[in-house]
Image: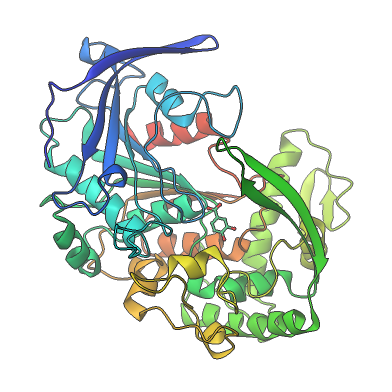
Length: 465
Ligand code: DHB
């Protein structure tokens, strides 16, 4: 593992009206004993103006924050990334390009994912590989901080969905000993892996309680609607719609899982802003439900304030320009169910998450007691420690984990990939433990990320200056 500050290229890209000249340090292998060199490396990009002594948005070569976006989706391998056009939004400059324009040093790590294997056919990217790799990349930045551009005390991770979950883990598990043996084995740099702030879009997290949270929200809605994605040759995704109704058995599973959620919520001692307990009655009603409703109402309010007409939302009561109340079941029917029960720990071991929780030899495993007990595939259970290492909730209250000071969580109002409860719980617990957490559920936004970069960058500037 090394960093040679003389080994770089200076490049220039023009996209539309905007041009950025930057210094690129590419393919920096961030561990001494990689198991997959291509996916345990990182690109670092720096606005060349900073090297020429200029300031951008008040940042110099020494003070610029280090923005660290990951490319993880679906818990698949996260590829190395570059400034350029967005892969999924034709004609739109990507986040790295925008971050460089804004004056940030940008460190873009690749990380391993659930489908990778070594030459002997052993899986190498199962949980907790993505977290371990991301931590190793952060350690590299801290280790070489005196030679690297930017302020490594201001590392801000960013990701969407599984990548948002990864960012939330980076923010909540800094330097925790659970990950140490993995980092040691890879020969990660002897430095810390704590970060300054985490930006998390629609984090698919708290996987071991995701099924019950999903059914708490969607139970009673039995029809589902989703797009199935397939990668075509040439790497373009194609989508085919799938609409259906859950089987009697799935409807029963939904009820059983929904019944488990109140005791989970009540066991973690959540509190609201004023310190009042957020709890659920056995029927799923209660202060925590009102807390989630408040998020949706806040979303509607912001939309109304921006001049949107929401009068077609029959589940929403707006009086004198104020979103005053809502019918939760009407809201859920409106956004529709995407996943059948169980949403994550599939009884036949067919979900991306079952695949994530495999190990070197076994491709897919369970990670909830419910699915293990009701498995149709005789599935094994992942180790408790591995399940924990993928869930920030276990670390937020653990003093051995150095938390990021700042979190920004965005979870779209009509996202159905996971329950809004999942991000709301994450937010409430972080705030309770003294982190400055900024939460919003933007109106009409589905499962997506990086759609409000101006606001994201304004938030980063606000906490860095
Ligand atoms: C992602 C989406 C999902 O619905 C899921 O279960 C896991 C990951 C994603 O987009 O990363």
